[in-house]
Length: 172
Image (cartoon, rainbow, N blue to C red; front, side, top):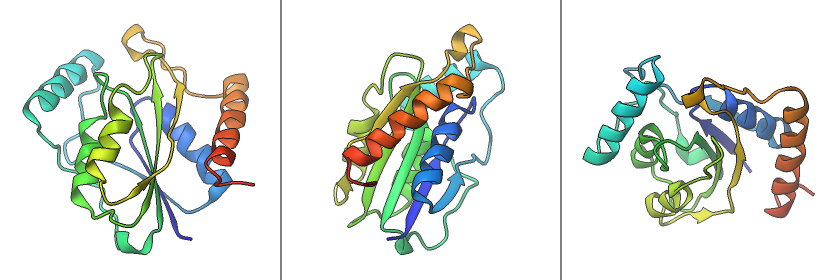
């Protein structure tokens, strides 16, 4: 079974989850980067994302995944933005054919949950098997709390990820 772990992370929280998953299941770890990165300023990014969601704009990705066909399982990680899946993840799911693959979403958020993002994964990958996703609270960037998952929080999340991977029968 060939595994790809793709993620988008603004503050480092989703990256931390991707690395924890990678430690458990192996595979290839890929960070999604945009051709034109989002602004550093949080409020400007929020405004841009709201506009992209309203217009359906899919920002072009700098990251390219060679031979997506070789992967059987694709973990897709992202933060919740505007109570939705971030536009760059939508771009990624539009750019490749995931038919016949197992897709496993994972998410970090500011405590509001996944919003509509896990449903969007199902909509954008209709010919894939979608397993139950994982979600955890990261930081609250709006309030200047980046809370990159570390220390006691990392241990707690590592245990949660392990239980989740066992629940979806990805670990024994």
